[in-house]
Image (cartoon, rainbow, N blue to C red):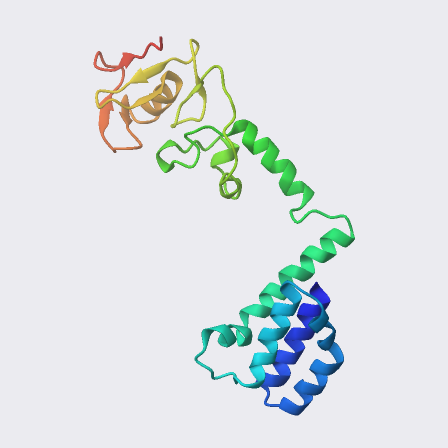
Length: 207
């Protein structure tokens, strides 16, 4: 348990400080009971007793790891787990769990791909994009095409148009850009410029 691990760590710190006699007395008072047990506690106690012969500068990996500062971080995590269990709390915040449920309902296979980022999509927005890892994709029976330029859905009222270089954007997005730049549109991905409207820019039809 956590208490026994803390006792062992106190013993380690006494041995690290060269206070061998105090470490032995401490072990007799607080660790001796583990001699009658079995499993992990007994193994840890035996390992700790080996430190009486191996100091902090030892090159023996089995005992060198007992002096590692990382053991304090492990104890911290054990303490948090026990505190969560004691007070009936989850390791993750309830807000984070609820957000993950909502994000998984929106997640698609394209999520996380920098080439498919949509500024209007919550799953493409920091910090939610970090929550995507490990979450399942939602099941979508019908697909939606979203304009990378405006973030609007492309449908019969805002049809997708194909530029001469193969990029696809919404009619509304191209119209707005052409109106601002004297009848010219620039592909945000490639930087290529085209005249709009133009017979080379065609409607895309999804079957």
